[in-house]
Length: 194
Ligand code: ADP
Image 1 (cartoon, rainbow, N blue to C red):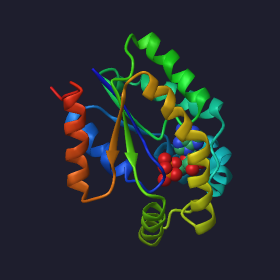
Image 2: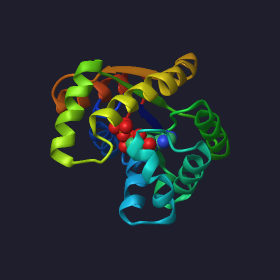
Image 3: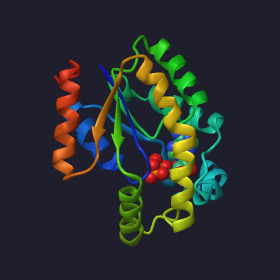
Image 4: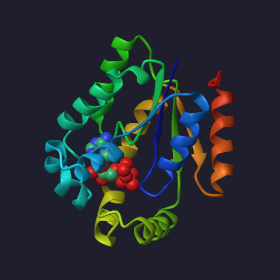
C-alpha cells in the first residue's frame, strides 16, 4: 500500500506527473480538480454548486471537497493506496485527511512537491488555455489561482515538512526527466513500486 500526495502551483505539471507516478505504483490518481470538472460537464448537483467557484479560481469549501474525497477513498480501487493530486490544499483538508488515514491505519508515505518558477507557470498556463480552453485558464483566474495557492497551500507544506515526508522536485525540464527525478527521489526514501 502506497499513499502519496502531489502538490505544486497551477501549471507546474502536477496532473501529468501524477498519472505517470500512479501508473508506476499501480494506484489510482485522485484529482479533485478533475472530479469537479467532470461534475460540471455532467451537470450534476455538485457541478452546479461549484461552477462559479472554479471559474473564479477560488477554492471549493472544505465540507464539499472533504466529503468527495472521503467517498472516493472508500471505493475498491483505493484500498491498495492512492495518489492525491490537488488535495489537501487547506489546513482543514490536512486535518480531515489525517483522520481518514488514521482509520485506514496508514499515513502518507511521501508528499511530492513540484517546484516551478512563477513566470514559467504563467507561461505554461497560457499555452494550456490555448490548447485546452479550460474556463479557469483566463488571465485573471490564472493569476488569482496562483495567489490563492501561494497564500493557502504553500503553508500546509510546512506541516508535512515537519513530519519529514516532503520530497522537493524541480518541475522544470522534459516531462520524462521530471518523472525520473520524482521516482528516484521516492526510491531514495524507500518508497518504491513493487
Ligand atoms: P490547478 O492546480 O491548475 O488550479 P486543479 O485541477 O487542481 O488545477 O484545480 C482546479 C480548481 O478546482 C481549483 O481552482 C479549485 O476551484 C478547485 N479545487 C480543486 N481541488 C481543490 C481542493 N482540494 N480544495 C478546494 N478547491 C479545489
